[in-house]
Length: 110
Length: 114
Image (cartoon, rainbow over all chains, first blue to last red):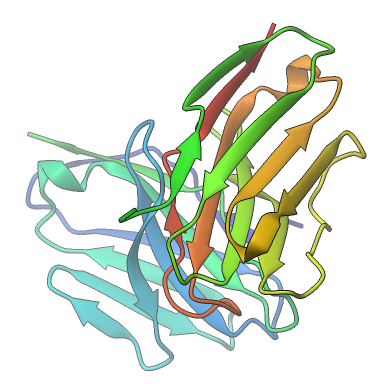
């Protein structure tokens, strides 16, 4: 089983739609969680950290469910510019490196 | 510089040759990571440096791969006797340290082994 698993998609949604991605992780001792965004042929960039209480940044909401070991990302009122690959990232407690999921591809259609 | 700098941006090499990839992290960042990303795939961890501690080499796929970080700053990833399966984008990232804070990535080196 992969340490971090994501549905690869692709998710093709119309502008203005709400879309949600889930990510599961295998290490119950994981301490830190993030969503990164990667545009085509570009480097990954931090979108948002994920806190235990859940957090929101504009149209983006991230949630963590420790009991079920998954994190989610909700994008409301999607824009064309949201088209990208969204990477789920987990930092296991005993390790120092960030572990990346394979990413979920989102295309927002006009 | 303002961000993580990697060179070269593209490298085409013949199978069996050695290559060196360079990463210049953000000034003051003590943690430095190397990842590689094959086409359409996620990021595969290779190696991690933190300050003066021994590097975490657990992700290196074979003994043909090695990396060093001189003076706690610039890092070089060396691949000896390159194989076609080594073709990928090699990404370097740095952060303030100990997995804290945001990891900033360079634009990567696209390696093609022919």
